[in-house]
Image (cartoon, rainbow, N blue to C red; front, side, top):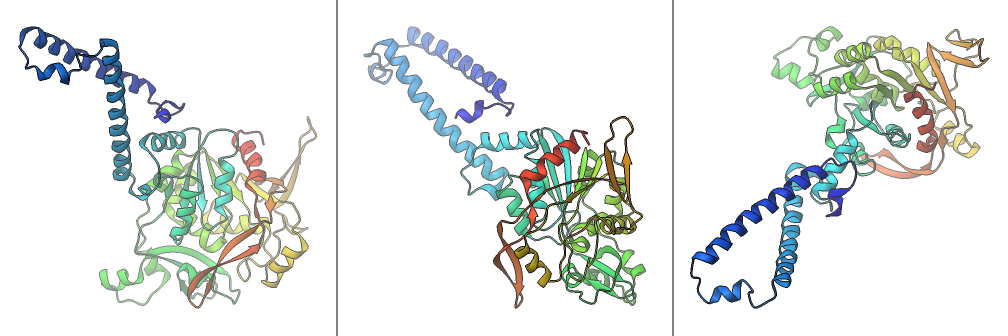
Length: 416
């Protein structure tokens, strides 16, 4: 019951009004009963039912205690049933209406930040945003190819509600990649399995092939123009989350299936371009075998700009070394640490302020914010075996939320 009085829930004044209303109703009923007692002859049993053989002060205390217990029991069960009705996905949790309302109120406070990405790479970013030392209202726009596991982790580990986790498009859509030789590849899984290193020219969403050929009665040979003439409907909640954001964070993940697909949606790209929010790109720690071999931070930003037309304000880069044992495991899979840029790369520049002597590094026009940002704790990593998703424990390099939080906090507070 005490949870109804905790700060931040915004209900104490209304609970006081409710209590006052109940007291006034009780007084009104008491006046009626007193008048009836004076004017109506009650049967002898009324003497015993109203406990008139007990001192009035003791009698009043008994009624208050019993009534309070009944009120608590009724309100407790009413609260649980309201939660089950409004939030059925949390019906099995030991959570009351007060706790649910507190979580919702907390989620609506502070700076509005929208995170775009997919995969486990966005989890440390969302956690870091909750550790910046000031209230932050986070919404996550997931990759359309994302599975329910990430949604569960965002909800159970980070406390995000269903309104805070948004899919950019609905069902019956497919992700397509056009390769440099003109071939088309359908689906995030097929794109991830590409091993010939052939560059991806562009990414786009289309309605599913079955819908185009059967539901839309289209029999023409598949082409980029045909597929792009059947774009999916973009979730208006995703566009609204971008429009309201004070900062837009691009989380690390698979560049061509977690990051770029959402950004290539025309409505999403237009909303970001029109937004005055800070654009923060958190770069991957390692390259992706056969997809981003040899990519630098500058290459990641360049590909984002070429495929989406979007430029970043900040790019967050890890500068801590990776331990030899973990690095060797990555290299066996064909991955390497992502460097800032090639030594001679024209996209890197340094600004030195005459009044302070401080230097700022820019990559592809984005301010570089760097630090020792990784942890190498063992983690459960999903992998596919014989068509099934299984888990294995490996020591891998991941962004450390505790190290990432101060950098993000400084950017949000405009101290960089």
